[in-house]
Image (cartoon, rainbow, N blue to C red; front, top):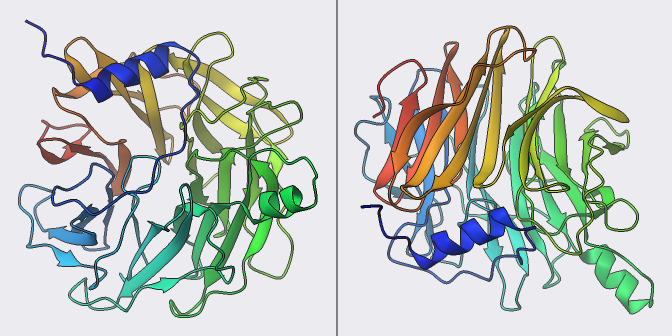
Length: 394
């Protein structure tokens, strides 16, 4: 007998089969049970760090055996606070060149759909964290959320987020404005963030931003924009930290027109050769996950439809000529974690393969690389799982 479906799962199926008009997530209140929004990272020695949320805290756990066992959790924020902890808007973790630990998250404010982007760091392997700080100078109770974080080749911590200050200004001036804007900031020392900069007006309101280090050590963003008449295609931009202004360029051209946010952010991985491997979701002719190699201003190269109805939240990684794709696939038995691989730089891919299954709800998959080996981090209702692509599931 098929596993009985929960109401959230049934709603997910409806959202994926039909054109999704998912509303932004409501402000979260602290919960005793961990939410499924989690992020993971390896340090240079192969230690695995995982951040998720429980009881109003972002918590950090460490594993020295690739996720088989974990240390007791350490609270990143000593004082409990509301935290967004869903798949599209989950806490993030990144490591610096000397294994500094950086954690960011979005904190709901009192008004619906509002938030502040928060940040803390640890210089002792996660035993202690600095007091959380708010990244942006703008402190109005509006949307600053859906944070994304990366460390560039100079050790700078770069954070981007979705921001509605320009929408508020347009509304006050009685001018039209679709969606939100994308802003970013960075820090050299992990203590002081520079005043935030706007990357693009009129970006989608609640799709996660994908960040990746470029071949020359910068940080690039791939995110859903809004292009005249509500075309919800994606933009690509480098987040300049050298005094120059970054420029967002349209990078997908499906012309999907919806008056709402699909709550489906993209994935991005950039190879040492500079090739921009990307995955994204659109539903112009039915819900579809796509892979392609970005050529901003032009249609993606080697575009490939990965999956259709029931597929969601894809991620991508690359190392040398290897490219790995993963996504969640829902069916009558629950959720499947599906992967495809390429050994020729993304020109051809293997057939889809189910790497793991879950009867309960799941978070979004995340690729991790360590010593040229690929792993998928997958948070499920029964616990966090780390899966080697070439080994048995843990």
